[in-house]
Length: 167
Image (cartoon, rainbow, N blue to C red; front, side):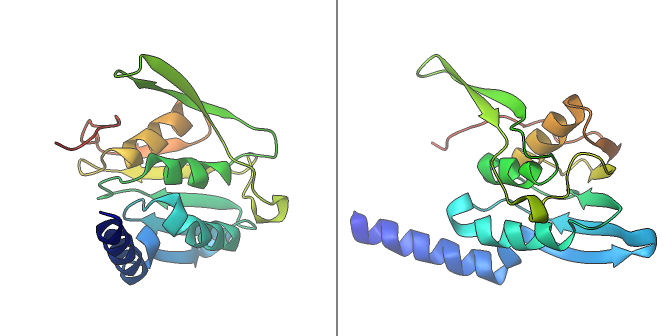
């Protein structure tokens, strides 16, 4: 039902706006350290502008604390978008996604973002996680840790950094 799809999409946009597109508190700490809290990942079609705005605000910081504690996930594509701001211009292979139903593996790469909006790869990033960090948030933390781009701090996460579909 096309009208039902439009209604669901409209409700998603309203919910995203109400929840600041998944972004919680952001602030600049002492010594020019940026702190960004991400509570969830909305679809990039809804959240891309908010991601660009939040990440460009911290581009000139000396270090970044990315707080994913309590983040239950959402769209892993938005996690990829966030990670794209933490590298330089050259595309970076983040991970691969395997789809069982098609038996296909798709590589996942960072996306192009404007250079003046990018935090870049030279400055330290710390990712905070806890036992409620789940799904796309775990995927983001793991991919960045495996690439040695971030230092992960906190508790063991919930254990569900895998794509899924509802039934």
